[in-house]
Amino acid sequence: MIDFFATTGNALTLNGQISGSAGIFRGSGGGAGNLTLNGNNSTYSGTLTLLQGPLVLGHKNALGTGTFVVTPGSVQVSLAANTALTGANAVANAITLNGPLP
Image (cartoon, rainbow, N blue to C red; front, side):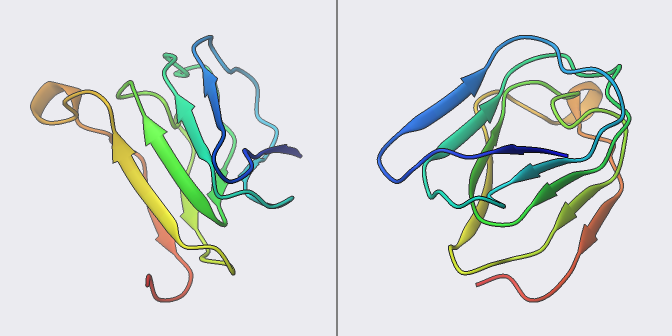
């Protein structure tokens, strides 16, 4: 398991490629700062779970090829894009929503 978090008022931006199949969590350890995934992570097949805080996508394959799971925690979750993700650039991941979004 890998946990990416950024504390309130801070940001963590990953521009490189993520690969493999380990589970990735956003916010398991806390943090309400921005986490931005800009890389082409098409070789990452694990599950990415958003527990809290903002997640920003900068590539259609930013989430990899696995399932994207949203499980809202104590800090509001949000999903945004810093690039157009429509048409041929649409995100194609399966999404599981566990609980209501605020």
